[in-house]
Length: 355
Image 1 (tube, rainbow, N blue to C red):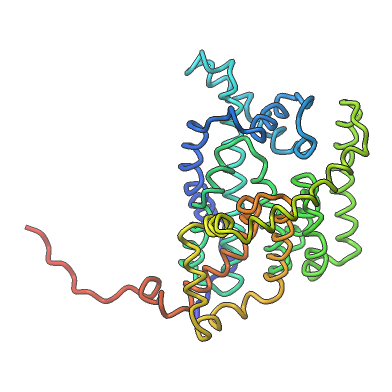
Image 2 (image 1 turned 180 degrees about the vertical axis):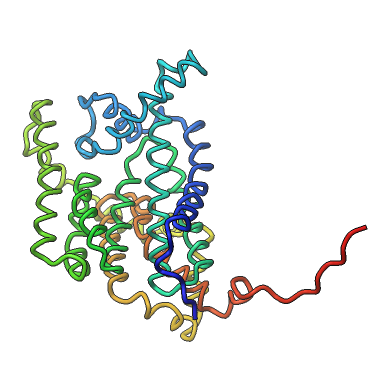
């Protein structure tokens, strides 16, 4: 049985953070440099928002201002560097695109640390936890999230904070999720019941509701300010929210199709076979499935609601990364199939000294 040191000191957590950053920064940089923005409404919208241009931005994305605002702040010093090294690029959108890449990579690396910690809390070995984090962060969705002007990185971090906070009874993690949730994405409303129930060991209901009111109030204030600035009627937001219900039929049809099955499998790619290996027979399932318990099951259910209402099965399915990471780490730790990979190093004869 693994006995991980759950009170790792900061140099070790820094090492985990740098490992996670390295996993996302390389593929993300390729995406940042080579992606064609001409056909992507999402990326163009967030670039406009970072420049303070909200007119014409789709109402679904208009209020997710934290990541674009942070990217705008980071872009200023980057522009000074660009002006010296690439004078012709300094006046273009390259510095802003680079700032999104930097901000998103740093946020995803933070998610990696939370996933590693969650795996240890569930009883996985450190080596298995590191491999599970790698399996999550080399997903194609991590590459998109890190390299493109998108805001998914913050919401992924919120999901990680919620899952970690509930498992570890960490009050700061739960409070951070409640404060950032609605500002990261409006669909946080579907995770709130889960967090209220399973996070009550960390923060009691009255306090959770108070922090939720603060976070929700800040998001509402931003929404009202933008609506007033643009002259948009508040009812437009309500109509847009209910319009997502129309995606249910489309999502269900897509889910139960060959293409939909491929999209689900592609969320974590070839690493999805870890779950299939862990489900191959009853004895294998007993090694990890009971340890996940109901909290993980209901967390996945909340992610499923995100998937069905968005119509983007793969991208929203990636929000289940905390559960996938823990499941993969437990399978790697306890399943005899992987004992040779993560067991102690075999004894070998020392090599003879060279001439």
